Amino acid sequence: MENYIVRIYRRDPNDPRNVLGILESVELETRQSFSTIGALQSLLVPCATPDAQGVLHPNTDPKVPLPRRSHAK
Amino acid sequence: MGMNPNNGKMHGPHPMNQRNRSHCEPGDERVVRIYTLGRFSVHSDCQSMALQQSRHQRPFQLLQALIAFGGRAVHEDMLCQALWPDADGDSAKNAFDVTVHRLRRLFDIKDLLIVHDHHLTLNNNLAWVDVWAFEQLVNHSERLLRHAQDPEILQQLATCGEELFSLYQGAFLERESVRPWTLSLRERLRSKLMRHIADTGQAWESARQLPQAIRVYRKGLEIDPLAESLYQRLIVCLRDSGRIAEALTTFQQCQKAFAEQFQIPPSATTLELSASLLNYAHHH
Image (cartoon, rainbow over all chains, first blue to last red):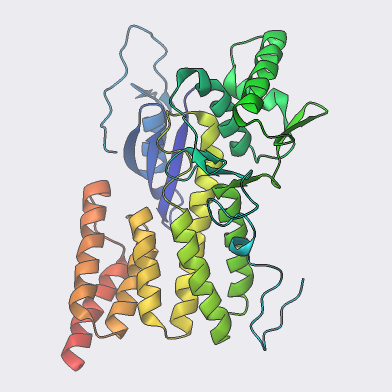
């Protein structure tokens, strides 16, 4: 199981997709910022690539390594 | 429990005035004191207990999990799932029974840990837990805030706030290895404290007690350096106190925090506030 804490610091009242926040990975002890819902999604879906509709799909191939994450804590 | 706003007396006893206040009060030698905020330490019979010995680790983890789940009437299945997630039902139950027995032997205090109908309780007549005291104090201050226009109540609020900061030495079990079951309580307590800070600061501002508001907002920013609303309130309080240089420094801190974390400037509201500082300096 992976555990994350999502902190939302700012919301754009005119566009609900624009949210400013921090994603903390509990196990990896990393912090990454995001400014849109899409960016948050991509942080949660390592090595994801968008399909023709722009929807992100997760990396399910175990041979593809997960990206390194910054240790900002 | 009612409150008489005329005499400033509070509803019920102040949580910190109850008998568990000090490490070792006369007649209170059997009370166990458990600290989980920022560190984990346990005192029994006025003595700090040795937590590092490996044979004590499982029993103390059970104690931590019990507190994380509220400490009262926690179902053994929840504790088994937290501590022995890979064990099957019977072996997890055996491990639980053995660990409860070992924890009881460590303290050797009758009725400290009560098992009833598959639920485990840490007896609050015999144990003081910082988390419980913290939550009591937060609730107490929320009641005080409803009458914060009364100067005596405001004074009680100040005392309450100092005790809260004194209790909150850090996040719940933050120095222990990462365990998912600590997160819910950890975040709930942090959130309560941040809300308390925002509400208390507002009460001090309404009472025009700006030095107290400034102190509270600064405490909040120590806990969360990205809480932009606290920067904004702090800038306003400093500006209205004529402390323009400090207000500008606060704005720069906010700017730096947002640049480092998000690579963006502070919000338009914060930027407008910083512009108002220069106008204020010009007119005063």
